[in-house]
Image (tube, rainbow over the protein chains, first blue to last red):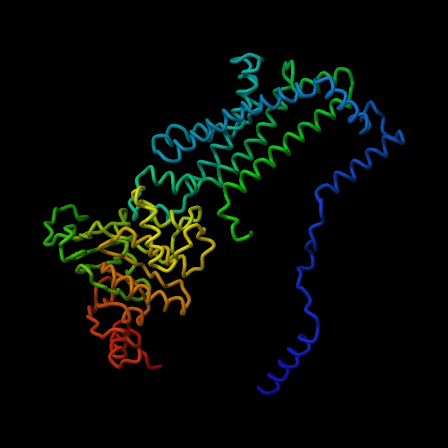
Length: 281
Length: 254
């Protein structure tokens, strides 16, 4: 007993003598590097530039980064790029708005009423297993190859993730909160407003992000079909003339749209789910 | 007036009249969740303003009884007479605050809008949380969250509070503070309380009457006749403890 306690005391002494070492898990990144996310793309860009400058890369296969940049500036000055960008963004925006509205309404009906569940859930879950792009031939037959078909395809793509996530969120409301609402004798409307909707909000926001991804995907596909404006049309046209720099420019702007919408959604999530993060601040 | 047996039983008491002396009345109450006869005929009366503690070992049916009284067991088969006054509030073991609502709206949930904020603020002040109205539940300690839950119960000015081990998840020091708060609040508002607990000292320290539930029946119904403030050093306190521990099948000497 005595020797044990002495040994412990000694051990305590030596550890106290040394400056404290912060304990860190060995195999994880030590520090978050500033702009870490930009390093990978930066290296790729550098390799691409070197390969283009040394003529290792045939411009007919892939244009040089500066060619892409110059073409971009040119198209911007002529106003064409903005016009295409605006068309694409408004197509996606309109489709998304419809999809979000329909998806959310269906989820509320199915998640909160039994009759809604019976009527809607089966068919929407079924639609989930049919890839959106596979519906395009049918939509073309019904709606033609104009703008309506494009917007409807995007809306359909956005509806499903919104519906699936929001419905699941409403279904997964903690039974303890339902019990609480019962003991407080909340009215149905109060229950929906104070318990069901805020409880399902995180799932809805997840659905929203998936819906944006689905909308961009649908946008790219429908813009290859008989478009007369939009980023996809710009790219199709460029393919005919072998202008790889314009194709690349289109890809860059698809990427920019995706990144910008994702950033917007993250911001929205931070605002709406503030109650989750109060301790972190 | 929930009688599950199907036959209409004229209840011998009225529980919903504000003047009525009884707030809980059960007779031969049977509940068989999952085909287990968890409540096997409970006869219980709680008078207005009476503080009753319900002791029992794990699995003795304490929570089943409380859930039956709170009418949270609509899908549990059973029979017997049950009448509980409508003017009741339930306090759970977990504070059960809605994490997305700030403290004040949590307290005023279900209140009429017009007077809600004033009443909620007053209730929060009573439980010692004045100034925390704008906090989120996650920012409060476990004891503070349970205080908010108490305020949420009190704000309805219930004639009956059903509490399911409300201090069970708190540390010993916080629990003592909560006992003092509970005593003070009950002295002021005089609701009837049914406190489910497994802590014998808590039961003797707070209640006027202690019940022991054993195999689905009330095995012991003992009035606690101790002067306030109650002290655990009081030999009578000790005697009650021995008696209750014996009824629970625990002998205190090792």
